[in-house]
Length: 114
Image: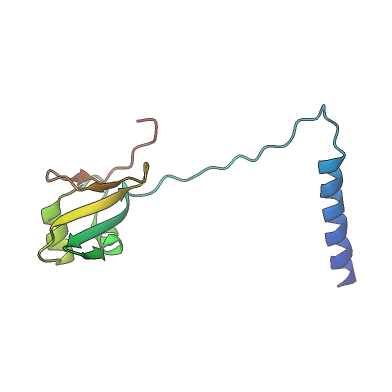
């Protein structure tokens, strides 16, 4: 226990020393963060019926295949949701809420540069 306390304090002191008393000619270390792309072009799929919103994301994600076109008709048949006024999704790259078009949405993830 005493060793753990000593090593923790020493580690903190060493980091503070490097931060406060560093040579200005040395560049600061930068942290590179890699954000993985999502598996689907949506973060969430929602069936909208009047004031009611039903999240069907997990159900659809378990049944959809890569390259498949997801249409409102396919969603209605797959989820057994009746009287759906519209289907909305949150775009996984832009985070915009969009309505699923009548011709469908292809299950392909594009990079931000596309």
